[in-house]
Amino acid sequence: MALPPSATTDEAFLREVDEEYRRDQAMGILRSYGRWILVAVVVALVALGGWLYWQHHRDSRAGTQGEQYDAAMRLVEANQADKALPELGKVAASSGEGYAAMAQIAEGNLLLQKNDAKGAAAKFAQVAGNAKYEQPFRDLGLVRQTVAEYDTLKPQAVIDRLKGLTNPNSPWLGTAGELVAAAYLKAGNRAEAGRLYGQIAQGGEKVPESIRQRAVQLAGVLGVDAIDQSKETKAK
Image (tube, rainbow, N blue to C red; front, side, top):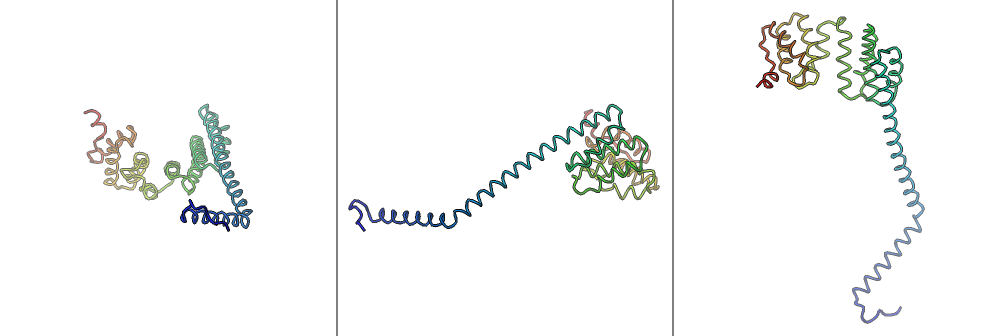
C-alpha cells in the first residue's frame, strides 16, 4: 500500500479510511437487504396512496349524502312528505353517522306530523340508542322520543329519562326541563316543578325566550319568584 502524501496528516488519513469502510458497509447492506428495503418502501407508498384514496372517498361520500339530505328536506318544505320519507330512508341507511342521524330524526318528525307517534318514537329511539352517533344527536333523539311517547309514559319514567339533561349548563335545559317539570306536576311534586321552572326561567341565552316566559309564569303560580335575569340585564 502506498504511503499517504507527506502533506496529509494522520487524522485526515484515518478519516478517509473510516469513510471508505463505512461506504463498504453500506454497499454490503444494500447488496444483502436492498430488495427488502425496496419492498418496504413500495408497501409504504401503497399504504399512503390507499389512505389518501379513502380520505377522498369519504369526503366525496359525505358530499353526496349532504346533497341527498338537502334534496329530501326540500321535499319536506314543499309538503311532499310521502316522497321525502323514502329519500330520507336512503340517507338514514348510509354509513355517514351525522347525516344518517339527522335523516332519522327528520323521518321521526314527519311520522309525528302524520300522527304516527309509535313509528316516530321508534325512529327517535334508534338515534338515541346508537353509540356510533355523537352525543348531541343522541340527546336530541331522546328528547324527541320522550315527546312522542309522553302521553303513554308514567311521570317518573319521564323524570328518570331526561333529568340528566336538565342541569343549568345543559343546552337541553329548556325543552327537557319543561317535560320534566310537567312530569313533576303530574306526579304531584309541586316543589320540584316550581324549582325547575325557576331554573329554566333563569337559563339565559341557552333557553328560547318563549320557554323562559312560560317558565316565569308557571314558577310564579307555584310560588317561586323566577325572574328572567338575561332579560333584565338587556333592559339595563
